[in-house]
Length: 346
Image (tube, one colour):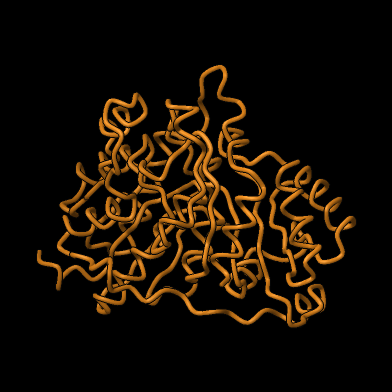
């Protein structure tokens, strides 16, 4: 079956937010360059708003804690997915669950099934510093999966998402004025990827004091909301949007930013989808691992000092670092962050 005959592709990427967000430019490129196809994304329902602007795309949410739990549940899921009349499967996750699905599909059908090569050996060499060099990007690894199915995607010819209007309710919260909007997402999944909050508060304070910017804070859980509320109450040009709007509206707000400051995390990838200039702060991880936001200037990355901490990157996801590497982020001063923000906005 050639690419023209493959009309419906199942795309598997269950988590996490950053990795799911990184599929977006690839899926945009796929549907723009092959408008005859439709795609179904097997992922969490929470992520559905991210895919709402992709032509001919829909989300299928598995019930992984209920009827699709375990080996038997995944067999039921594979049967449900087959009823969608899928012509090919692109597994952008390549984990135990997707491999079990692969087994079922291979056993019961001839549907082509292509999986991402995560480059584990190259990443291991990068972490052990045996080979400190730029690895293939995750975006390219995703694109390789579709190329194997017959869909070569030109990564240099992708039209990113346009700005989305925010609701009157959000406009009222933000008190729309002429200030430039700077989004700050100070949290990450692991401590090794997170800029110290006391240093980030210095950045927020200095931006606030200029009177030129509206600082918009993004977070997730209740503890994050409490912390960011303190900053909102302390700095008059600072607004915490955590848990105040829906995820869909949060995406619209990000699309309206003049700049996003984020960690090596999901918010950086989301901002990049809207072509928002994105400054990222890197601790024990490194862009060489392939997780840099799509189409962003490489100079927008602020990196911890490898001369002082030569083992960086100590892990791919920021969850591991040796003793003595607890303060790698402190080699990136608030002054460096502020200088980069001013430079990018100019």
